[in-house]
Length: 380
Ligand SMILES: *Cc1c(COP(=O)(O)O)cnc(C)c1O
Image (cartoon, rainbow, N blue to C red; front, top):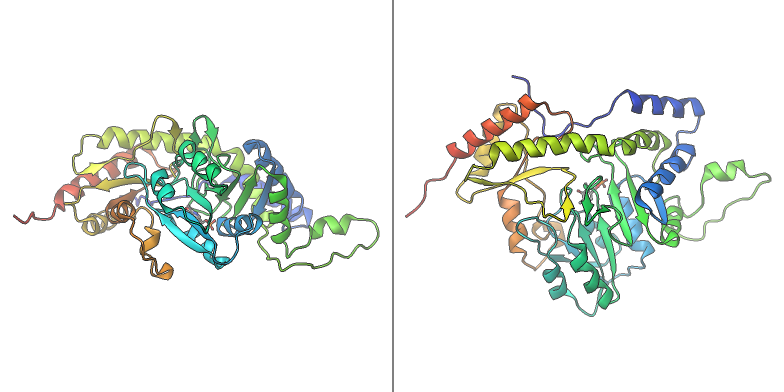
């Protein structure tokens, strides 16, 4: 039996051809012609005031918080159930991440929990489109507006998803995308910051290149203007090699998502009647990007045993994502019981655009057998 990996990036001939163009151009570094082409493409797709190509989504979050003026000691409310990049970004600025619990069905940040955590030092909120499903922006918007806070959308997993007819990545004044190899569009590593306000994007672009403009641009200027370093910046630029790959991948978002949608629909058909697991909930007003397909196992099922069983048969699986507040680095004294529960019970099963129908059927069949085989004896 062929192994069925949890993830598999869809990179092919078109991406290779785009890379060959960069080799021929002689400019593989960042902020060159391919980087600009990608930024224009992203700004158009998302109707953004500005788009900045950066080395990864962690860097995009860091730049977003810098541009939004977060200062040491400020509190930023972050969605708890996620790859904990938002809380890391808050800590990069010596600010304080405050963890908001999530909704049980969707795993997205619970607006009521956000409202409960507001305090005098709160400056903003980072919502996460959890494993590809947009959060409740219609409920979050009035909360942040009433208190004059910023709202950042971590859309790392959500390329192609929609919320009330709008594109994920355009649901808040600043959004951050990831193009890591496990996301729906990828250049191996990569990311982008999107902003409605061109000034935020310009600030992020400048700080992403040690605080000076594009070296490619200054090499084209007649004369010898020498940029001055006036602030401490970073090197968060995306190479033009990666940007070239992404110009193709961004063009393919809808094609690749259609294939992941078909996989999700088939899993739902095959597993809907299994009482020992709950399928992911997608509210009517939004669509999922299916970065991950996570089922919630019944509390009686031994998840580690199920995972070992599946992996033993060559079927990739994993936990869903992280309960951030439980990660030792944050020394959080808060509780987020819903997030903690999903962290214990979620099981991610293979989801990518290369899965064949027979593989999807095999996963569903083996998963069903494994959960039934690993119900813990009930204590009475
Ligand atoms: C993957 C991920 C990130 C980090 O993305 P990188 O590009 O690897 O830095 C940030 N936030 C969320 C929600 C993610 O899933």
